[in-house]
Length: 372
Ligand code: UD1
Ligand code: UDP
Image 1 (spheres, helix red, strand yellow):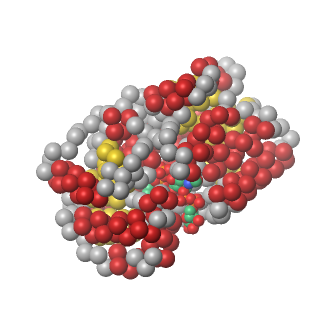
Image 2 (cartoon, protein in one colour):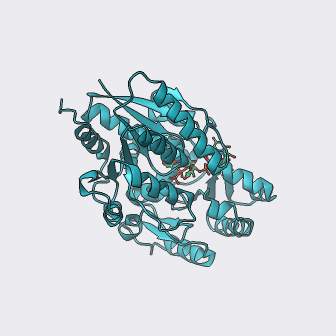
Image 3 (cartoon, rainbow, N blue to C red):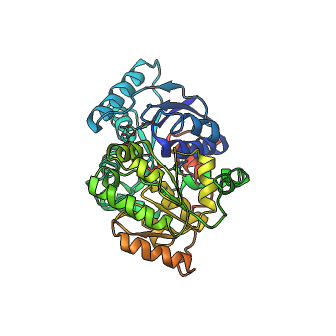
């Protein structure tokens, strides 16, 4: 049996891996996945709930790294993943990493140095902003990966420009949309807007967790103000990432937001609950990578609190607009959405719910395993 070590660490990884494992079951059942959880995210609301809702199997190994500074966290994953690889009588045929979190880079590096090939799913995305920790993770992971599976054409173009060999690059589409398609009906059935006392189509869903927004005190204060301004026009639901809650509490803003009229502050939501709210929102405001993609497919307007995106197709073809920290522009666009004047967008090619099986076929071929 050919084994494939599949690495997850943080919330968006769980969504992508659920789709990929499903794709492997359907299109490459000869491969035997071993699920490795680094433990980068560990709260029930950031990890276990996703395993349960997305039907992920219990991890075969849990590295238990937890939170730390970038260097310490990346180093811990590197050391523990290497130790796990060395402890095995037979090494896996390859390590599969997804996305752009610290666990992605650390496991890719540990693996390649032991001669275990690396497969990167969601390769080639570039924000061209090296102050983003994820951009460094993306650049370095793609520089050492042996098979590069891209979700959109910009990823292919970036990898070519960086001189990665044509034979290693494949456009397979977006596995995050596979997960969305698989779960959307169940998510809608939860009637989440009503559970929050909201009318479908008449509220804003807001997420923010990037260091560039929440780790800068002046920006955080401005965000609290624009949140309150939007909440005066339309109810807002804000499921707060643990990083965001911590920063808001440290800045003394949390209790003020709890008292803000029209604002529903919640802990992070499960995948189904979140998707249920996202699918019925009037608009989404976010700095998440994955949510820019999900809103494009759902046809929900998305205002992104960043001045760049590594997912340009969501702006060029989808419903996404970059507003950066221009809060006046944000309020103006909220007005356009409410007036029905916002762009409609279309679904990008290969974001069709079948990216997982396409990725699985490429992985099987890369590993030299014949079709079933
Ligand atoms: C990480 C990823 C980011 C991704 C995000 C998804 C990196 C560099 N960043 O950011 O790309 O968009 O995950 O959600 O890998 N914490 C908890 N409980 C948890 C996890 C984290 O309380 O289960 C708190 C801790 O205080 C921790 C902080 O959140 O220090 C940040 O966690 P970390 O994993 O370092 O980065 P994220 O901001 O979650
Ligand atoms: N998500 C969720 N609950 C939340 C916020 C987000 O289930 O409270 C989902 C969202 O639908 C998407 C993924 O988490 O599938 C995105 O993860 P996140 O924004 O943490 O990371 P990023 O994509 O920015 O790396």
